[in-house]
Length: 166
Image (cartoon, rainbow, N blue to C red; front, side, top):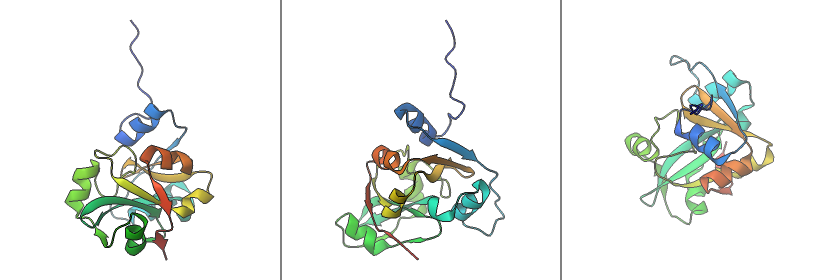
């Protein structure tokens, strides 16, 4: 019996989720520089040569005590009030790092909106819909994936709203 070949992109739960769903995507590994002055997201955008407004960061928040994911362009900040409003909540704050890592199964700087340990309610900034492809963490520092925004919304069960500012 022939041994089943692994996908060349298998590895992180995000990539496994994309492969399992049969979603077309591109994989963009790069060498993460721990000494970089740039944020993880801006470092990724520069390393893969994609405009920062097209590369999105995944931020875990707490809205009225419930973990909620906000996905915004790396060159902008998450508007916590807008995120809370988008999910019908009153108050949002950034989640504690340990809680974010425990819930998602990823480390900060490599949190992907895809393949999270727990499926968290997710809101993607509406600007994502203006691109043919958006780029998000592939589940570890030094790895981004590109996919259609509609596929990102579908795979994460997300809603979209204007939640970025700056």
